[in-house]
Length: 372
Image (cartoon, rainbow, N blue to C red; front, side, top):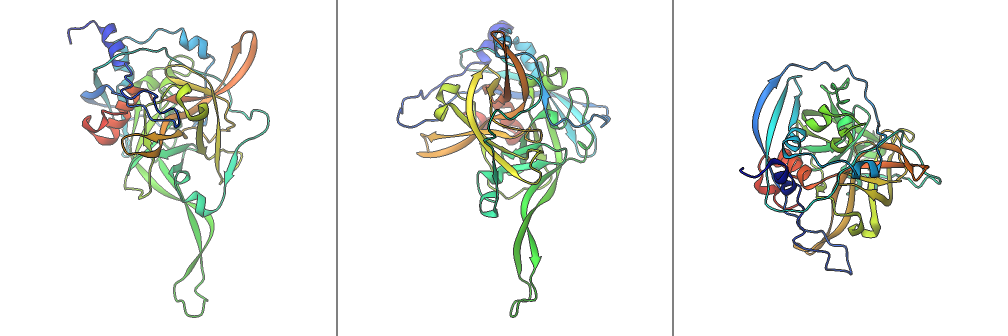
């Protein structure tokens, strides 16, 4: 690596659209060449104290213009932010330092955010009822965390969520060591009175079936930062379950520019606290973006944190429509827009670097993580 560190980082942040937006009649997934992120060294840390109160939202006062004006991190800073901590079910933890290797170029600016999630005017959320919807894709990919947040199934044993759902930036939250993930399933009533049926069951209401988490990955950009600095840019975590969930999951993808999203719109489903027991779906337009964040006004309440933000676009290689998660719903902020206060809900974008990191956490190798 004989290239200057800062120049290298610009190379690493590069986004190469090998397939530009040429199919005007349908929104098409761009093909990105993503960097390679590989572990360099891992060492043990002391067992943490699980004392932080679980917060179902995170806030920041730095708005889009504030973030756009922030300098990009240097190559060494990027390696520091993308290094990560792993928490295991027995309470032990490790820290892994990473190396970043790249091929192509292009740069953008960065981002951050602030205060409580809100409803913007008329409440446009939809509660999803009935097992025919709740147990089918894409709604079946949404799961509930025992700390109160939402997560999304992204592999056979992996759940993507917000980092603040398990770690407050300084230490792990209460319940993180025995973290569980809840899957909505139909309750069954014993109908054994039925005449010729000895062991029949009829669906009734829905309930959660819980699976324990084996280990949790959190980027150091979240742990070293805080929501008023760079923290919200890295507000994501990956959970590995103790056993496969046996449901269809949603793949992750690199977040395209907002202008390339179908209708400039995003979608996500979560377990908002004001509608206990309900899965709540919503969609809305993206209002602004930075390199790391999407600013929108999707109606949401605490509990929706960690929801996977997704879009449906045309996959040219397979000649089919495909949904991918392009971000993680994080928090709320107030922004002074030309002297007029405005509020946004914020989602963390999956950038090429974050895609490479999360994909490696899932796959365990970089070979399957070359195309975002």
